[in-house]
Amino acid sequence: MNITELFKNSFKYPSKDWGKVLILGLLIIGICIFMVIALISLAFAQAIPAAIIFIIALIFTFVVALIYSGYSLSVIRETIINKNISFEGREEALPEFQWSENIIDGIKVLILNIVYMIIPFVITLILAYVLGVFSEFTSFSQSLNTYNQSGLYMPNSMATMYMANTGYAMLIVNTVAAILSIIFSLFAFIAMARLAESGKLGSIIKFREIINNISNIGWGNYIIWFILLCIIIIVISFIAALIVFIPIIGLIVYLLIIPSFLTLFQARAIGLIYNEIN
Image (cartoon, rainbow, N blue to C red):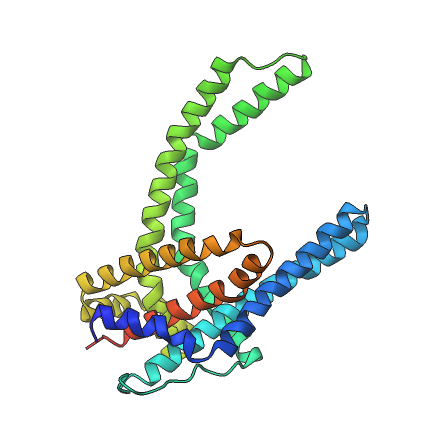
């Protein structure tokens, strides 16, 4: 399967069962409802009920995130299992929801993300410290506090100097963070496919085998696939965002369809590119 066919298949995949797309979308709607209720309670000075509802909303959001990740893993798993199926004229059903299993799988994906993002995170923090980002922020806050206590305003030239010093450092830090995130994401996607295939967390840290898997796919093909995946997701998100401008209904339609559609699209694409291993 070439890359064009791969993405065409991935794009059509969610439409094979809109019911499951809508179920995932309703979970997103549920998060929004909890948040709105919490804000309404807070607006009416009901601090305790608002805090309770907000905590419930956070817990619900975390569980929904696990379900999304876990169900994505089941989509990748089914795609790998059905590797030898001809996609022409053959319908493949989306996997059924198995809530407890989806949550467990979601926890596994969460661990995977921590493993693959901890190194970029630590390196970014170290770089920010070395470049003085934290010290600049601390110095700026102390200076601003001193001026406020004395009833004076900080001169624009001083504020501009702090912003310039911090801005250059933050540009470097953000650039390095973005590059590291992209590099580690390349490996994380294959690690996720390996996790879906084996079900074992140990498979995500077998880096030599992961590199071999990418080599078998072809580094050029894999990087092109990764770039196109990112572009397609960005374009779909941007176009779909225009729906939000339709009062009320637009936002509901967006939340109900787009996040779940993109989740299934990406999971399917990961499974299909992993199937390209010779």
